[in-house]
Image (cartoon, rainbow, N blue to C red):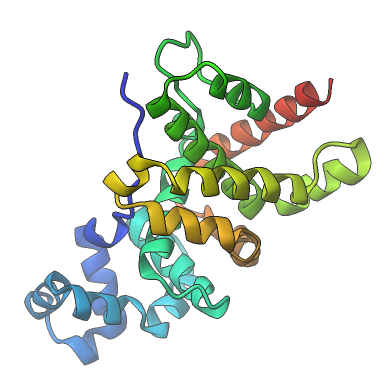
Length: 248
């Protein structure tokens, strides 16, 4: 089984409902649907449209079920909160948005390693697997550890903080350290160049705390689409078990 590499693809995965949403917010500026589709096909125009603060306000303020894709939703929220944290590279925001969309499904948050009978859910398992994995698999595991650390510390900071204070589990600094380290090593790997991820992984390593804090600001809003709450609860429970196992 080939391990999947997350790519910054949110900005090229527009759904029909995303077009409708953008028109409902910015139609007065952009014209009809045909005009908007042409603008979105141009990278520069598309990025300027997605940077419009009106889209962010509409996503946060509209009541009821939002009819937008998860890729559009996550990208707009992450892009704007990253800008406020002076993380200006759109590809970094796009990568983290894709990470959130993927990890909202429990099966994608699990580390599946070729030759291993079961997914690796816990950091201590992933770190142990690095010792015996081949070069390619080590790269994938390191990226996954970085992603896993950023996701958990970005979305569940209060839960992590509570467990650290009350039960002696690893604190947020632990997640930052392990995530930053694995992103840094992965960014130097030849495969990071092949997948055009070297700059993204390097930035996430250097700005891990700022990235994590930016996600903390919107963590209560991040997962309001679909039925992802069960998946997230399951993931957090698995991580809680992993912390306990790692302490023993």
